Length: 289
Image 1 (cartoon, helix red, strand yellow):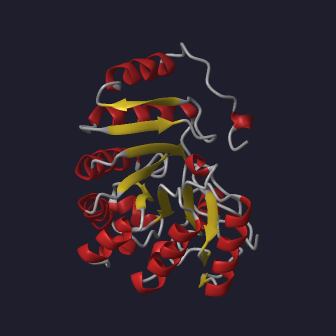
Image 2: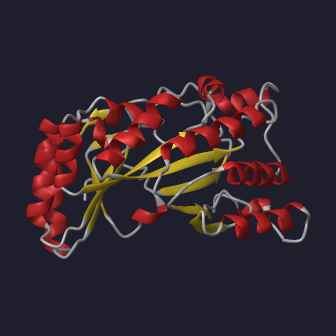
């Protein structure tokens, strides 16, 4: 299969057919991200996409899930994206779901009719990196999507029956801006009401602008206890009606998962115990493995 490395996909898409539609990320500006630094953004050749679909269909005709790569396949206009989705639906009779990463503008620049068309062709889940609900923190990180744009995108998608899996990056404000990071993130998530919510912990990647800030002493990373406290404060402030929550990424020091609001009190009790030293945290050397 003609996939150009590295392959970046959500953990939940481990068993999906990974179809590369674009290379890299069209908004590759975030100071903390090194995922696509070796790729120049471009749309993959249409015939190559079709060849990948045909090849996978011969080997796995019962495929039920497809994940569109790389960073934001939904940057494509519907006129280019829908024919690919039609080909997927024709190739895989049992196809149940198409998913993709998305940034705020991927969704907000599409009309309601566009989003409804994508849903009819089985796009039913988008993964969006909110990272932080604080405009100040996002501006410092040079993230192109604004908080308001991402909140609008999740709600617009929900209006078309497309679920959202929203990602928060604990520690992104560093020590100096932790309070703004927590408060803004609570507010944004409560306005989004995402179907799925994941917390990851910041891991400073060598060679990124953020790593250079750390070297210069302009950014102080949070220690494990401070990351747990951010988790606790954000969870405590959430008023979510129906959200599946996970904080079990390799980057996290304490795996957590549950349904909100049902498991909120239990999750807060676990965090209180961990902050008090009553739960052994994942050793630092295991993060990222």
